[in-house]
Length: 562
Ligand code: ADA
Image (cartoon, rainbow, N blue to C red; front, side):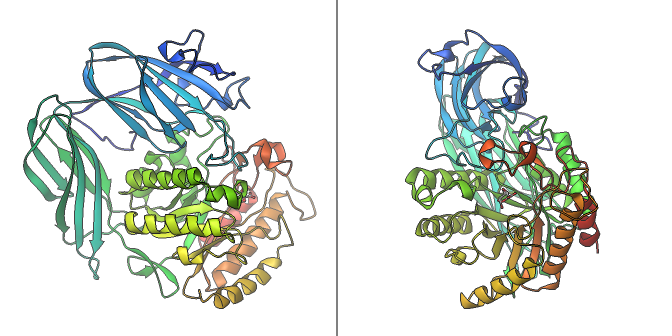
């Protein structure tokens, strides 16, 4: 996996970046035509990438095939794919390995007894939609297709560490962390094997001793360890603890941080102190790269968000790249991570569909499994703007909420609600998050004050006054460089005025404990979003798509830094 630090020193990792063979499969005939045995006609593309930024491919939706030849020293290998949008089927040397659904999480295949020499990896990628797709076809971002994150081949030998997670509870004085190190071992050999295993968390030894595994065995260890004099993770001091797992032949390095996040007395408390959640919604997208977002730009986006005075980024609307989360961990920026259930496209009936429910649960499972150790993730988001007045939404929220509370570690669990006056799911969130667009899709800027009063009354009527509110989305579109003498929609001035009005209102009202502006920068969107999306973009960015600041950026910065 690509991280912002080295995950392995002993294990050999080969990056399959650069030139791959590529074939469009317009008629979806590749599988029956056995293209996995070799692509007859192909062109060269770069991986990772999306195809919808290539000439003549801008709007291509459907199936395409990728093929890569690589050399292996042989033995047991792990083929790792960081993300494929949206559906992948994978073959090695013409042998089918399996598939993966969902465009924003990693997956892998372990293959034993690979011969020394050249091999061919083939990936069939499908970015089409069906009745059970997550997201559905109507979604406010572009339907990119491609292999969007790194592909690697790891060589596994002896007993290997495949996975780790540090579960912990902090003592009341936050000085002691009672931890369980969950470590998954795998014996890559064809016979039983033993190794010396050493695990440390920061400077503390978790385990040092020998272990034996049967041929091909996979075993999960749960090892208790106590960390004293904990150096907490916080925005001001983002302290991290190294996790080191070493066997005779293999290793795995990771990091975590200790912090306590809770909703208490109507406030969000981080390490026992009230935190006002302020920041932006950000898509991991750029017009030149789509969602194959370069690491260099991740850093730049964080620099900009910090300059603006943000303490939180909502990763709207899907799990972001692991190395972006590594950077947030290091720089003390909090994060809201969610899965791409983007409501407007989902009818109540679709939410109740068993495949949709199961796919969503699996996406949550993957997100929690791979992102568990990031201290920056303080919020898990279940879904965004679903028809939350429906029984189907109630059942979905109940299921996802209990999954995330039981398995997600110390995090606030919530969802972004666009129907605050009809919602029947508020039982399934630790705090209420509302998306609203007064002064843009309806009404005018002063309607925000009426909304705040109306929702206060509604919250009381529901008996939910103990749940504070974060405004998880609000904003207005502005075309970069568009100014007039009159302060009208689509100008930079109008956007700045609306953002200023909202930020001040939310700050002065103690029902609100945070505000996340829609959105960090403009993004390309799909034609299903209609003509309200000038240039085919969602233009509500504080920056344009090339990260050039609009007036609203400076307006938000002024308030955020007060
Ligand atoms: C919604 C949605 C966003 C975006 C926004 C808008 O709240 O969650 O993804 O589409 O509206 O710009 O209208």
